[in-house]
Image 1 (cartoon, protein in one colour):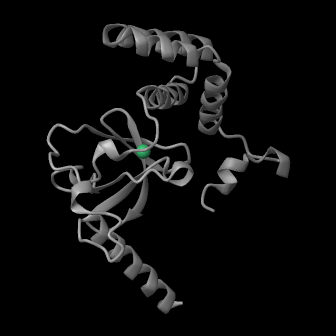
Image 2: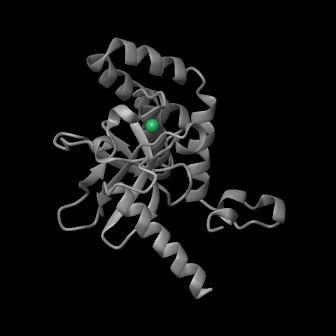
Length: 209
Ligand SMILES: [Zn+2]
């Protein structure tokens, strides 16, 4: 077992070297692939879809999932790595470190080979906001929270971009999926003791698997 773990650690360190720009035998990732100018790149960490998971949003567009965790830094990978083999990776310092979350190194943003726009991060954050309000304002009905939060979002986007507003409005037409996740968040806040196996929330049961 210890041997396997050691092997895993070595692999991770090797991958890290790779990321920090050392030319690899196969040469697949070179220094030219690294972003030179790291100033002004916007980082935002939000909750992910799975309980306890964290997503890093780069420049309000690119969603990255935490891939590896080291003592002093985290490695994040574009969410489309698995499906589209998007090569984008970013190493950051820890959120809780002295100077907060900062970029150590990252792949050039131009090298994303996935299609990205601002809509998905906006919808994800909107969903988180709805869930947060549903947990906090237990006496406020869903419809009221939805109307209020939707208006806040629309007003913000209106001043930002008409195109973005139109795209987001289109996604919000189907309010059902937002309602389902928000109501689930509220249900978790007021848990009932499950009497039968069927009443158990499978998400809660599986959250540590
Ligand atoms: Zn990508």
